[in-house]
Image 1 (cartoon, one colour):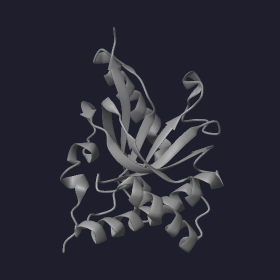
Image 2 (cartoon, rainbow, N blue to C red):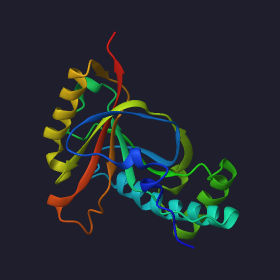
Image 3 (tube, helix red, strand yellow):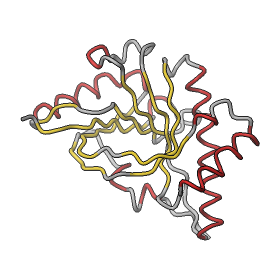
Length: 205
């Protein structure tokens, strides 16, 4: 049986963007998540989170296939990024960042399934951050997004363009900075990395 690529079918709008920013409205979705803090480039906590998410996501995929017969492609890594004081949130200094690393899962992943799979995979793979993982419904709602092409370190100009678009659209920033990593940095030339940058918004009153 072929695996269904949900990011090209059911969730296509969630994973499609280009260099021209646009407004979208995102419904509630299920994710497997791990929270943490610190610079993702240097914090072992972030590396542990990513190393836990993938085997757990594959474990949940296997559980869905056993339960329903349906197979799906595991979706990309995503990240929510913020600071306690968002006026101090800067891509230049990530040491005070708070984050949630996460991977989307289909609605077929139940709470009972997660309660069984997460500890089993954590024990089998000896995942340092496995005990922090959870499956949760995340609601984003209205948002603006844009595609960034290139290294993560050069995102600042793309983020500025997105924020300018939001302002010119009569909106203001709400919620958490959201990134979706469409490329595998281990196998992709940094100049060709594709990252969706998303920002929840609300209409200015």
